[in-house]
Length: 300
Image 1 (cartoon, one colour):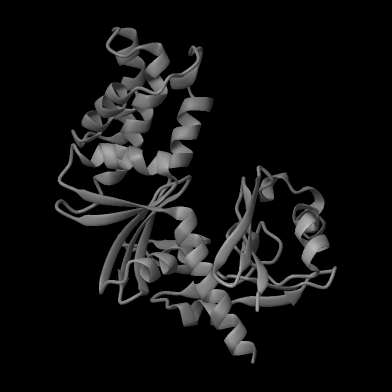
Image 2 (cartoon, rainbow, N blue to C red):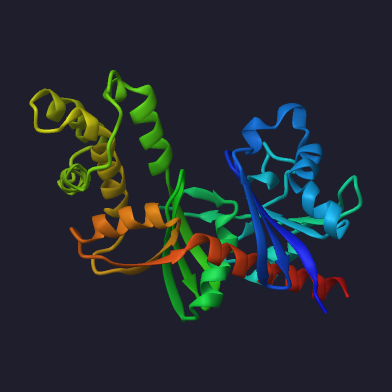
C-alpha cells in the first residue's frame, strides 16, 4: 500500500519540496521562494500555494519541514536540539501542528552547541543531511563538509552529531563579489579553474584574510588576473581559506550540490585532504525519511 507524504527543505533564499511514497522520491519542485521573500509572515499561504498541485491530487498529505522555516525569522521558532545529537533527540524536539488546510505538519528543530573553536554555533537543515549521510554510508566516524552560504564542518560519532563549526564562506563570497570594491565594474564572469586554483594557493599562504582578499584587485591591476576571472579567484580564496581549518590528512565527505562539491574537490588536490562527494539531495531525502518514520512510530 502506498504512503504519500511531502518533505520540505525551506531555507532563507530557496524552497524545495519532494513528493514521497514511503522513502522513495516521486516528484520534486523548487522555487526561489525562501523565507526572505515571504511577505507579512504569510508562510501558511505560501506553502499551500507551492504544494497545491499535490494537495489537490492526493489530499491533505502529511508534511515534514526542515531548514530556516523553524528559525526566529521563519514560520515557527522551534528550539534547537542540543549536542551531542541523535535522530531520537531531533525527533523529540520536533514541533507538531496542523496546517490551516488540514495537513498534519512537523518542523525539524535544528541543532546547537559549542563549535570546534569553543564558540556557540547552530545549524538548521544540515542535521537532516548528516543523518542521511550516516544512513547511506554507515561508519563509526564521519567528518563531513557541507558547503553553502554558511558552510559546516561536522564530526559525527556512531551516527551522532558530536561537534560542528560554521564558516560563512558562501556569504563572504557573495558580499565581496557583489557589494565590495573587488567586484565593481567587472565584465560578465567566466568560470576559470586556473584562477580558482590561484586563489586557493594564495589562501594557503596563511596571511590574514583581509589582506589576502585585496589581491583580487591588485592581481587584476597588474594583469595577472583577467577581469572575467575575478569571481573564480575569490571563490578559490574563500574556499581555500575555509579548508585551512580541516586537519591535514583528514578524510572527509562533501555533502552538497555537484557543482559546489567539485570546487571543494578541486581545492583539496592542492592540500593534504581526501574528499569524497555525496549528493546533498540524496542525503536530505534519506535523513528526513528516517526522521518521518520515527515521528510516525512515536505517534502510534
